Length: 281
Image (cartoon, rainbow, N blue to C red; front, side):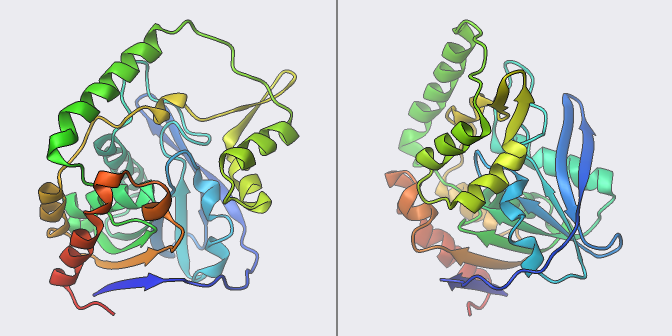
């Protein structure tokens, strides 16, 4: 059953203790946090672009206590290792990372809670491994991010050019901040963030160095994603999802603030694709 909700209100919180997670990968480790009982119903939580698993600090206490929530820092974000030099940050790679994590956790069937970019990773994973995903919750995400076929070559070339230019730049030492200045910079770049939310992100988004802190994320995540799919391909993948899907959309969220103009026209067709699969409530 597909459900599409808007304007979901915040509920009261209750304390939950989190543990640290580390999953070895060929280039280092994927880090994260774990809430809930050891044998609870498994839920994987995937954050949005340039965020980290601190995005879920305030949400997890609102959710059913009998579940086992694992929120990861995606590669190049938070406390997880950066990808090796010369390697692109692309959606298929993130999907493979999810498979690495759940394989290490020995999860055979689980649910996914994905926000924004994490929702797009969740959608693709649910399509490629439908037998593994029981339910998929998309927070301010449509599960896929189609690109106009006429723009594919332009976008892919730009992504490759940006990577090559990035690699040619002389290596510079990272700028060191006080915690207060780092918080000020994050809030200035993201005016929709509350100070509390910013502090949740900085919990894993900063590294302590001599003289202060530096941002932990890999700045290559800012480069154009070169692995693109069209609307037709997105709808074909969507049709292969077997999980129950819940789509939660924000009035002032992704579509208004971040989606490229050519992508906005695809959102209604993606939602219609979900409707064709199941009844909408």
